Picture (cartoon, rainbow, N blue to C red):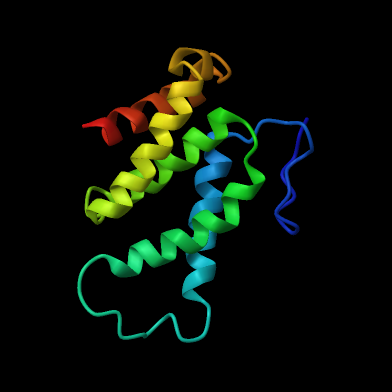
Length: 132
């Protein structure tokens, strides 16, 4: 059984990172960003700039550890899903272009075939939300 090492934020080498772990790690990095001195009660102005800055921080922390196209697709879906349609046009375009590039190289059904039933269902549901 493969076990995630929470203390060291590591997943066993050679194993595909599960979708739940990808979104948990992304949310954990958002939390860590909020704990950095100066980020909690900063003057953020108006709009969704705060989420985009937090998201960029978390994204940059997690993306280097994702190797497989399906993992890279998963993080893009998580980022857009959590933005909930409130992101700026440039933020949206950046992540949608990443999704398009991944799907240009790999067929969605091939990527989905790597997932177990429950994981595939959850990911497919999230993908459908982002595509609307």
